[in-house]
Amino acid sequence: MITVEQARRLRKAGAMWVPGAGDRFVVPDREMDDDVFVVSDMTVEVHDYPGGKVIGFNGTTEWALDSIEQREVIWLPREEQLRALLGPHFQRLEAVPGGYAVVLTDGRYPSEDAEQAYAEALLALLNG
Image 1 (cartoon, rainbow, N blue to C red):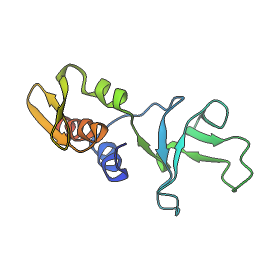
Image 2 (image 1 turned 45 degrees about the vertical axis):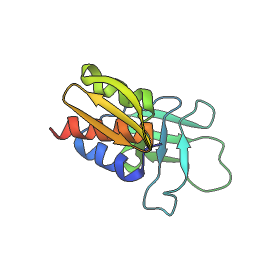
Image 3 (image 1 turned 90 degrees about the horizontal axis):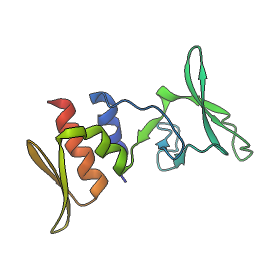
């Protein structure tokens, strides 16, 4: 999984998120940075309101968070989502000593974790 710091950098660089079932996210700066949530039609849903998207927590009784605006959470994209965002720049994922490397048309981005390698490649692409 990518780090919250990588996810923050991706958002700042312009990675766009349209929330959907199976998407992972964190709620930062509320003492829940280590808790990863997953959008699900049964538990966590995305609602479209005139003021923007709201992520709703359905049926939660453990804590008092019914919903939160999308802009207040940080998306943790999965490997296939990162690969899709790389588009035609993506060439391949390679196993390398100590981890993986994502190879783009114009560079190679190694990391211990495959998703983190994809995130670093996307950051390089978005930041030019």
